[in-house]
Amino acid sequence: AQAEIGLIGLGVMGSNLALNIAEKGNTIAVFNRTPQRTEEFFHEAGDLQDRVIACKTIEEFVAAIKPPRPIIIMIKAGDAVDQQMELLKPYLEAHDIMIDAGNANFRDTMRRFDALKDSELTFIGMGVSGGEEGARKGPSIMVGGTEESWKRVEKVLTSIAATYNGDPCVAWLGENGAGHFVKTIHNGIEYADMQMIAEIYGILRDGLKMEAKEIGEVFGRWNKGRLNSFLIEITETVLNANDPLTGGPIVDVILDRAGQKGTGKWSVIEAQNMGVPATGIEAAVAARSLSSMKDERVAAEGILGLPGAALEIADRTAFLADLESALLAAKIGAYAQGFAVMAAASKEFGWNLPMPTIARIWRAGCIIRSQFLDEITKAFTDRPDAANLIVTPAFATMVQETDGALRRVVSAAVLAGLPVPALASALGYFDSYRRGRGTANMIQAQRDFFGAHGYDRVDGQDSHHGPWGSGLVSERS
Ligand code: NDP
Image 1: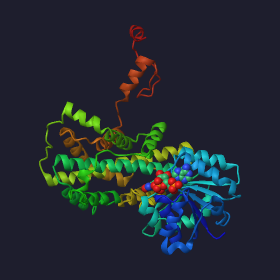
Image 2 (image 1 turned 135 degrees about the horizontal axis):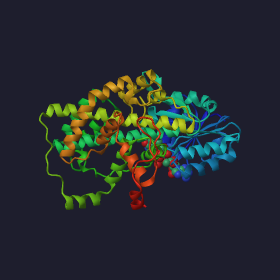
Image 3 (image 1 turned 180 degrees about the horizontal axis):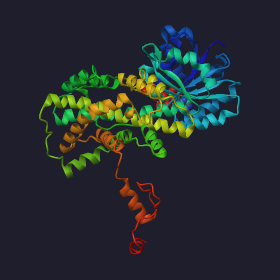
Image 4 (image 1 turned 120 degrees about the horizontal axis):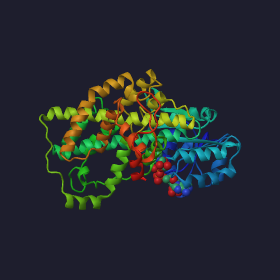
């Protein structure tokens, strides 16, 4: 046995991660269900072949790794992982660690972790973000498992992770499902971020009637300012790319029907389970679902037509500046919600999730990497127990500076019939969250009226039921 580590699954992510691991000076044993892929991979490894042991059978693979063995499983999430683990287990020895690095549902990770808890084998659930390029050059890595198991893989994971100003974007976040939960919320926030960008693109395209290249220039400018991030950068690149078939902008020939694999939906479900609003992520998931109803939308446009009003703006330059601030404001809302969901889950599952660390390891390597996450890191480092990101001093100021622009942009878009569900969700969230006296007194009165649910009083006096009267009671029964 000579390999320090093993990896199963040489798909897009696994093969790039394996090359990254080898490049950092580690010898790695690799295995893939379809052996032909393993051969191809070995060929692709080129100069790194010295540090790659390509194995055709699981037995050979396990034997090639020095015990105690860390084994990364980077395959299709779901049942495939259980099947692969069952095939692997008979060959493993005490203290070997199986590391599921795919996009697992954290509830599956908890189940797998529990199933192995009393055995001599160890399980780690690890979220990896950064796509193909991240896996190859340095992803952001979110680790869940025992602290002891983390210590055993810390060195190799630190060597392959992205860095932000020299700081590695990898951390142990807590027991069992913590890493995969945080990865799920990372993806949920990514959904919201992408949807908000798409809504702003829609205002520029359909409201201001701008061409793709002109919109690309706008995003390019924004990428030099406070919105500086990977997603804004690729938006500019995408808008500037041409279609090889028509020669025109590629975005204009791409069908407006978005796919989704589940992490956005899981974020929303878990947020709802815990009673924490995640309206930005919800809006983004719903928007993808609506996008997939292409035929229905086309038919509805035929029946209902589009709202006739043109986008009303007095000053184009000022409106463009408003769009930039609006996007920042809406982004703050989505991130605040994502972090609030993680804070609730941390209590619910006893993880003690470190918020500043999560923001810190998202600053580079992952899809939502940005300068903005550095600001979140600072805000949570200063106020680790803040109830919500938007009430930390730095972000409270940012919300006050930008929510006026968000208000103007959402109003203008709504009047022109341009859909902005995610941008509007952030506004609704701010306006509800910051209002000390809300309107749920009406909900409570109604609930008491028809269901005798009772209510609390503002003056703290005991009072449980309203004076609705017996006549009303008989009418409602
Ligand atoms: P690919 O589709 O490129 O590769 C899938 C891999 O899974 C192949 O190696 C395939 O083997 C293997 N596999 C599928 N079913 C089984 C099975 N039943 N038993 C054993 N192996 C199986 O996927 P990706 O590399 O894109 O994704 C891998 C994981 O990483 C997924 O969980 C994904 O959600 C996650 N992920 C993906 C990201 C991305 O940007 N693509 C980003 C972050 C995470 P075979 O060659 O034999 O078919």
